[in-house]
Length: 454
Image 1 (cartoon, helix red, strand yellow):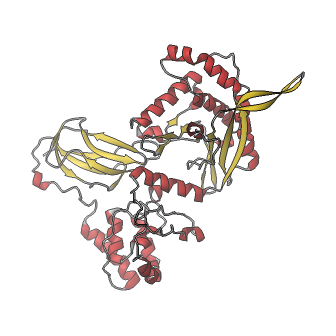
Image 2: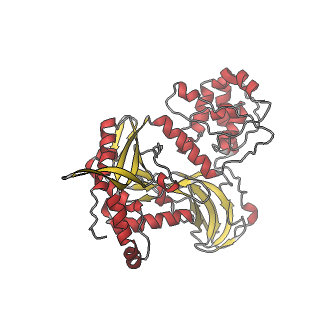
């Protein structure tokens, strides 16, 4: 009998794991080479993984909603079709023998309490929307760790996920016994609270004990469950505000030259290139120039180290028809001319809205731009897209009366103006750098040449 192991492939920079969202083939089904086998989710992107062999699916190593690491065997295919279906394990097959897991849990529990305890069955998702693997839930149930206690653990896994090491360390510290009484009283509210994101903060301190408020549900209220993407966005935003002390600087820029130039060339551009030119690539061009002038904006923080990025990869926050948000990344934006930026912006935006982004399309960003002006907003205070240290919000372009200085004196004229809102991480970006950067972006926009070619 010849069998092929199908492993979870690497699906982008820094992607270390994926959630199995749907098996497209059942055990015993015949599958062709490159035929879709399983749907997986990494961060914000859902992908179909094709089969790497032709044969019969005899084993699924992970069930739906379980998390696999890059390189893990997720399925086994018999290439000669001789493997009996009866040998195939179900979709909930454990990655490790149950007796080994039970032994490890028993050893830790007995070390803390002297005897094992029986826990209550836990859901795979807590009120915060965070996913807990079957192994973590099994350990928590055997130890009697409640969902509230589980949600209080600062996970070391991807996106703050609680790992086996985290739960075992929590038990070994003896923390469940110290809080059981208070948790028991709070676990039975008169009205079930609505789900709310739970901040997960590393490093201890008072922030690690922050809990979401208990929200009472009224008789006329509607409860809407967050979808998977919204939960990920919520967790990411809460994490960012707790990791980085945010400061925002504002600059008003006169973009009259840009508006006039675009109005002049947009029809010719569409005829020659077959697509529209928006303001976004023009703004990105100015941002890239400013990053070259102030490279310490293009950094990340790892512990006490500053990682200076050599590549300039611009993320562009894009609103989806569902109301959610995704940030595709234009890689090496400094190597593209204005036409190249325009094509990349249009392509990424279209792929985002049609759910055709690849995992690598949302990886590796070093600086992010969000266009709040699309919704008529004048300015905003954007949240940094970790692990970056800065983000720029582009406000709406408005016609405003303005003082115009000339050699013959000042006069009032109508100009096109917009606000730039620059949020930055005050751990590594001080007010001077953050303010000078956004001022330089405005300078490049105001100095735009109306007679340039595209």
